[in-house]
Length: 454
Image 1 (cartoon, rainbow, N blue to C red):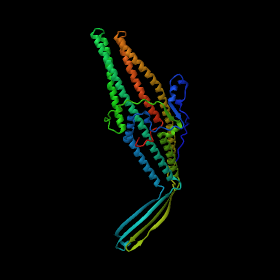
Image 2: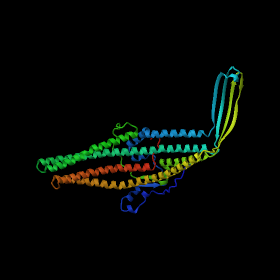
Image 3: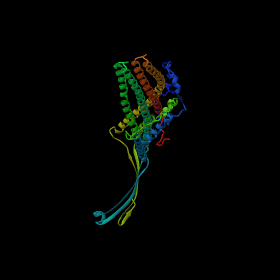
Image 4: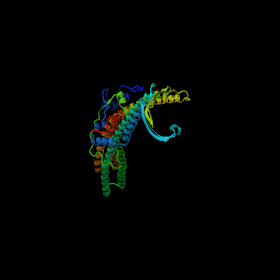
């Protein structure tokens, strides 16, 4: 059974890329040219190469080879393939060979003598699928197989996206730890300076305690970050099929600069590409075939049979054979068949609505992912400017504090603001990569990748 229409009105263009009055005075419309949509653009199936990160590419290869959920999905495909073959077998005749040998005395039947009876026979039976019941069941099994194959592809898309997201989260936490440690060293130097000034009676113990408190607060962030980092590493190990705790250093080299401009397919192409949409569409097709099979139960079941064999019984022999035709017509079943048809109708309605909902969810995923990416671009630019400004403010505060122009509180506030700004920018840099992953995954990228990735 061919592709089924969802009946959902799909716009020819992405709304997130259309200029709006609400964003007229913001940077969102200015960043809209970072995402280009073409009708003839194809979904990037190896989207991770867009990041130019060898560590990520190695993780993708390992995940495809070792992930257990993906292996389970492959096994389900094999199960569905076997079920389709079983359904197809009902369209062909069934042939059986029978052989037996018996010796005994059957009394008057054998004239009160012991005789040996040997027989070999071939029997054949074939259901004439005149009303299409078995054909409908075969079409249903084929659609279920196609749905299972698409499910395996959907698992692959979700897996690769999760690997990339976890990897970028891990790199972000490494960067957060490095930034916090660097700022902690700066705050410790400030604390030593304040302690030296106290010994010279230039500041009070209150200033020392305030500087020490900020140092302790920053120091307390490190264990939390390391715990989150370990959790991300363990999650990544599980995705790769490794034992948690065995993943060592990942991506020690600096991350390559991000190529922020991408090309995406038109909405109709994305809907046609996403595996989860094809899963829903094939399930809907299977429900249509299931209903046809249920309706066919109202009609007669016609079967042909044949037999040919050889039989020998001392001192006689014979060649039994026979052909026949059988017909079974349901007459009285107290509504069993009608209830099966009604249930099939209800399942078909459910499958159709699920298909429509999946299409709507797919469009929502893509629109939200692009909007998040474009807005994060604007936020990232502002954060970068804020980091530069806070870094300069912190440098000026330390210099002016040494010469007595500002108090210690100004230095502590400037150092705290710098740490927060750098932390937010690092998180924003990771969010940009994660948002790109969301776009690629929402477009259905990665499902055509086999077990061996270049």
